[in-house]
Image 1 (cartoon, protein in one colour):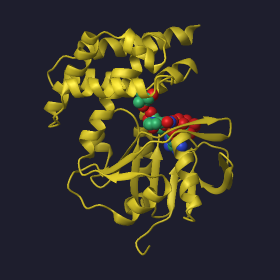
Image 2 (cartoon, rainbow, N blue to C red):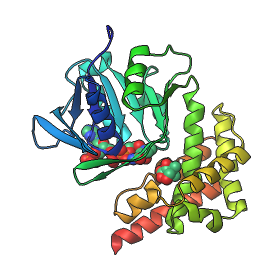
Image 3 (tube, rainbow, N blue to C red):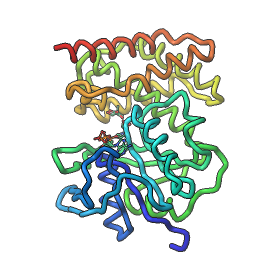
Length: 297
Ligand SMILES: NC(=O)C1=CN([C@@H]2O[C@H](COP(=O)(O)OP(=O)(O)OC[C@H]3O[C@@H](n4cnc5c(N)ncnc54)[C@H](OP(=O)(O)O)[C@@H]3O)[C@@H](O)[C@H]2O)C=CC1
Ligand SMILES: CC(C)(CO)C(=O)C(=O)O
């Protein structure tokens, strides 16, 4: 454990809490970073199943550490701006996890920052976290070709297995982005569970959304195939048939959705690249309008 640093987990969200508990259970030093405006408190208790851990809290990065941040896409840029203000962040490594993509990732993230992509599922129920779906995860650096941080990988893999090092995490992120773009907005538009999409969405609709994603990915040097993306989305919709997507849950709970970082990202980044993405733009618009109507009710 010679080059190990203490862990700082951002927030008390579903995935962050799960990881914080699992890291602490490994006997590793873990601190929780609360929001800067959060009331001052020195520790907090997180519970998952029959396990509870009491963790020290902080509101900023005060020492070199390994940071695990699973936050909503709209919180990524504010979080990174906040982290960059702490001198200790320079000697810290960031592991970041969020659905969707941001237009300005290249300027916000450092080359050695890591992306953690997961199929685990978790949600918060009052002050408890529920590990609802046991999946798998992949880790890779923002810039391809950088060396694997062995000890950090080992600790994350032991805490929440299985974890695979992925030298091409960018392609994996695009696959996840595509699946989320093919499932999430349609569950809000049709107000249905994932499995019902197999009847609700026509093959032509999925084909157009997928083709627009493939075209944008190609401009960014990522090779995808529309048929593979659609197959993957079908498999996920079947495997999670009884689930409500995260976007439908956010919509129902009156929360901001991540639509602007999913289909909205495809639409805006395509326009920037001189492409058009009408199917993704229309879906983004529909979800934004439905959310606006919901807020007016
Ligand atoms: N939950 C799941 O099963 C899965 C989630 N994902 C994706 O992972 C990401 C995280 O999901 P999830 O854990 O569910 O999200 P949550 O909203 O439950 O958790 C995010 C947490 O981060 C906190 N936070 C945000 N910014 C800061 C900050 N600057 N300082 C301190 N705390 C901060 C939030 O605080 P506050 O509560 O105050 O907003 C919140 O508690 C999302 O993009 C989601 O789509 C992907 C796969 C599965
Ligand atoms: C894969 C899927 C669609 C499962 O519900 C998901 O990641 C989400 O809901 O955001």
